[in-house]
Length: 330
Image (cartoon, rainbow, N blue to C red; front, side):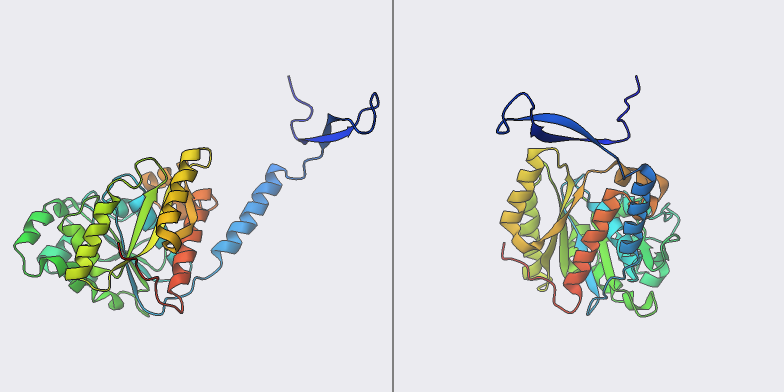
C-alpha cells in the first residue's frame, strides 16, 4: 500500500493534550513538506562537488617525496596512494606515482598498462634505465604520471642483493623527477608492497616522509611497531631526514563503536600526525580500480572521493609555506 507521506519528512513534535493539563505533553506526528527532492539534492551535491574540485591546491615549497607504507595488507595503502595522487593532480599539482608493488595494483587503478614487455620500475631499479624511460602520463588526469610495476618486479628483491648501493637505487633514479613536467614534479608518491623487504627499504631511503594508512579495525596496530622500528633503522643508517609525517585512518565505519575506539586510540598515540579526515568504507572506492580508474574520476561526488580530496588538501596545506611535521621518536 502506498504511503501518502512517503515524499515528506515526518517529525515528532510535542503539543499539550486536550484531555490533560498543559504540563503534560504527548507526541503527535506533524507532516512537513519535503523541500529536498532528489533533483534538488543532486543539484546541491553537484554545486558542492564542483566548488571543491575547482579549488587549486597550494604548491609545496619544495618537492615532496612521500612513501605510502604498511606491511599489513588490505589497509587501503594502494587506494590511498592513487586517490590522493589523483586528487592533487586534478587540482593543479604535478604528481608522480611510483608503483613498487609487484602486484601492480596502483598501475591498474591509474589505467596504465603493466604487462611484462613494457618498461617498468624493475628497469629503473635493476637495469639502470632513467625515469624518463619508464614514467608514463595517466591518460585521464592531466599532471599525473606513473612508473608502472610488472611481474618482473617479483624477482627484484633477490636481484637487488648483489647490486651496488642496493638500498638507494630508487633514490638515485628519482633524482631526475624534475625533468618529467614543466615546472617540475611537486609530489612523488611511492606505493610499497605489503612487506618490509628491499623494495620497501628503497622506498624509505628515497623519501623524506612516510604516510601510513591505518584501517579502523581490531588488528589495526598489529605489526605497526615493526614498521616504525624499520623506519627508525633506515633513519639511523641510511636516510637521516626520514620521518612519519602523516597517518590516515581508512575503512572507517561510523556504525560501529570499534571504529571510533580505534580512531581515538590512534589519535591519542600519534597526535597531530593523524589527519583530521578519515576515509569511510565505500563500495565506489572498491569498484573504481575494476574500471581502470581512481574514485576521483569514477565517482567524484561519492563520499570516498570527497574524503580523499579533503585528505589531499590537508597534506598539501602541510607542505605549503611550512616544513613538514617533524616525526616523533618511536
